[in-house]
Image 1: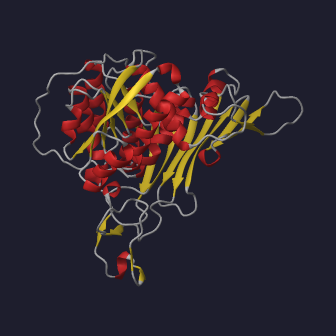
Image 2: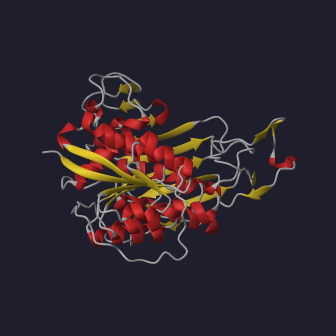
Image 3: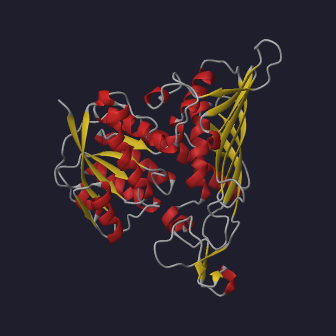
Length: 427
């Protein structure tokens, strides 16, 4: 008999819709889970998004107050897809209500907030899946196995990058991503966290860093309406620049960051992230160099990887490896080699691993333990950008691990609402 799981959603933007579609697609790609999902309730402060949640996404109801979703006895799992500054508060509410948690990164706007959530989940036995979805690329999982199996020999060097142009236009309006009070760090938490997580997944944990950061565009225009980080301010007469008379406000966090890093296993690396880079649209990549070979992968060619093995006969140079069955969960989506998977498919893989852990199967990874590790690396980079010196990546965080769930509706939870915000929009 199929198991029922009631779904709650906090934040009805692009990512909230993607979480919802991912739950629905599990029956097609992971039928052995044998789960029926009921879309119980969603929360968002924007009435247009609440209507979308019901009329388009299929939720039974949509409320302004996210607590009504978390405390609903019919909800078993909750997706948190709100702006960064709400993640910790909402995640702790989910944990306290004895529900299971799927939260987008960063889990908190600081390492302390992330550790607080991880400790609470560990104490409650809560599953905590985290949105490091690029780990689920089949060729990334193949890269993990190549390094772990010794095919590249001793790892000596790593290059990682996430370069994006979404903030490269000075007409792009201010939003929560550019405000320290709402996003915490800028490109470090937004993009560099993915680079750090990929590097850690393939090579192992970082031990120390020296970093620098910059604000490329210092002020951004105010904009009314539902502007997101891809928007550009314009009028009937054409674009309006911030310096052209439109009210503007300062950007409070960094647009670019770069770091030299040491890995605990002895390798060295260079990691870079930028959100105001002209040219790259979504270039996330990693190169790993070893004593017996090397590999190179870029998200803009998600289904390809360049691989060099020194012991191959002759002088083969790099060869192109195409995704195929046997690489990660590729066969769940495509029957043969070189049939491309896409970004949305990675969220389906993530949903499957979350749900499998909720049902008491394998532990959930990447989860809150990995989120703590990434937050500790980002924290070290922030400290180094100020001190201009090498900073250790703390390993003294909470004793957390991947969790399996005990699913049961929890009792009503009493907690303060003082100072809590109602914004749950997500772009």
